[in-house]
Length: 539
Ligand SMILES: [Zn+2]
Figure 1 (cartoon, protein in one colour):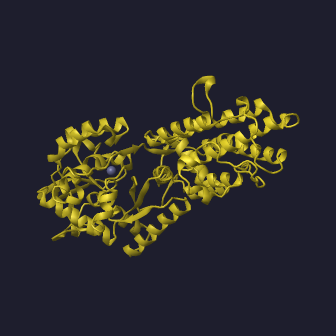
Figure 2 (cartoon, protein in one colour):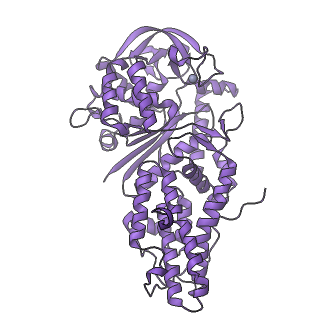
Figure 3 (cartoon, protein in one colour):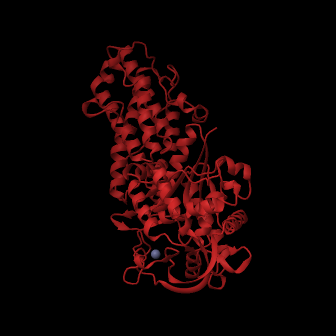
């Protein structure tokens, strides 16, 4: 069985999840569901980065003193959000866990044996916002441009260093040989320039006395491991590194790391260099040819703004995604998932606006998709005794789609989804495939098909034709429901049930059986329809 391993970054717990976190996580979940429905064995991981001074600061600010209690409570808050968000089966990693500590220690020792960790005196400016040292070129007016309100700390210490510079050529070769390693293209150019001109040895520890958190350096309790060195290792910990070598061999390397564009240096430069180093002394990290097993793709999305403004605590504009979804009834989470994936081309900067969310709800979901399903079910029940009509004659003019149609639709949908372009995958379901007036098999065309063929009039004179029309619409809705499952899983369930089928039973079939013409049995009972996307309350 093919495996697929997708990760989100692990999030700091200095705050509760907001819509920006939900965005990355929903994309990961959609990808996990997409591959799972297509038969892969999927590992989907997310979690929290607990070994950061940021968390300690937030705790102190909240007036608390028990760090473990704070971390436990915050980890629960994140888990609860993701479970309300309907995330599919996933691993949730905490970097304070014993398994993670064991993995980090093993990894550190391997890099040490490779001769890539050494001690040196360091003097530099540290941004606690980024949890990173800043080089002179990265500082503007004495401040970190990403965190202009935070004072940079001037630090002089004797620390452990990672010999990153000796991996510069190997990294440049990696970007050359495997361009998909850094996506999209703009990010690859950025990272290539960074590695070429600025990639230098990293300080990978801090004095223990200056930190309240962090994993101690193996064999040197006076130092703690730098939070990013520790955090990146989470991706191998969740895959079984250090605890289950057989599982790890099966699932590693990761197929896809989803990250924000502000952390590509860590994921596209430091992380592969760390893996190349540790792999020299740890066979679990090597492939059969003796090369380091590196992640297959790192895909960076853009910054996320709200009504054009950066999400920030001080602006108070951080939206709680679960609260927001409540405004859209019992499929609210699906509505929000749809919006996030449909409205923002993945990889570009995105803006969230409540106004556009409402517009898409009304236009795309209620008026187009919901209306199509509702009319098709209601007419079938009315004219065919509460049942799925028999499609007797086969006049092509009376059928909206067919086997070849849904095949073509799936092909287009899958190609976009594989490329992380759920915006285009969804656009295809609404706008159809083909060009200009030749566009076919979209939800918009299906609604037009009802207006053109008028089954509501035809039912008085030609029941055969009416049956063919309505059967094709119901069967088309069923196919679209399965294509859209990675994005709107609850909606899929509702549609399948409205068509009189058992979702759980259908879900055991493979995708080739689900997305194919004729899955709906003529003569089977259609339950009383209910409105999938009800009108919004005024105001
Ligand atoms: Zn910063």
